[in-house]
Picture 1: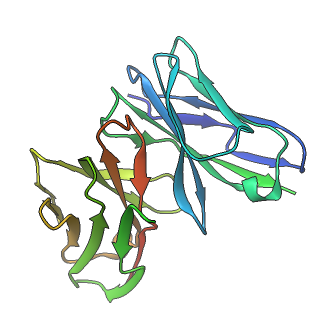
Picture 2 (picture 1 turned 90 degrees about the vertical axis):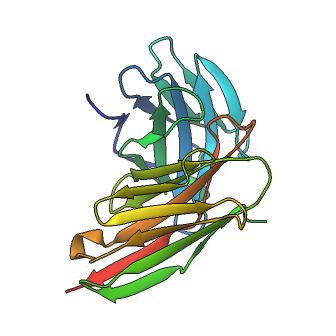
Length: 112
Length: 112
């Protein structure tokens, strides 16, 4: 069974731009969570989707948003990029809510 | 206030040594604790511990959960250079869906 896939793997953007990241969960998994990982803050929860509904949102500004499609694929969007948004963005999928999460390879975003 | 605290922050050992990594968490509404191994890529799942499963073992790795004292340990025996990685502990709480709180990790280096 294929693992979690994320595209693109690397992105370079400039301040003020916006970006969309994509995540395809493991086949059959309906829950998708997004995390931001930085050297200083570690892994921080962004949001979680299940059956196309956002169930939880972490403590991030409204510039961070996401959605989930009927096939469980998810996208996250960051608008008006700031230098501090440079990070590894990880997507994790699980069969159901509160189950073990399996991570994708991540998207490395660099904001210049 | 950190919900999940890992110690030590880093550790350097020789091949063949046994190491113990620690993870402590807040008491509020504990649901499950997960251990991950992260090399230069996405975290890979090791163990999940819950109220009904407080001890897990896989090869040279084992983990226990002490619900009374609110901590977990990850043991690695007969360490190998391939064990070098950051080990992450994540805790999920009741009523927070798939929102897991991650510790900052323990960086383990195994030297030949």
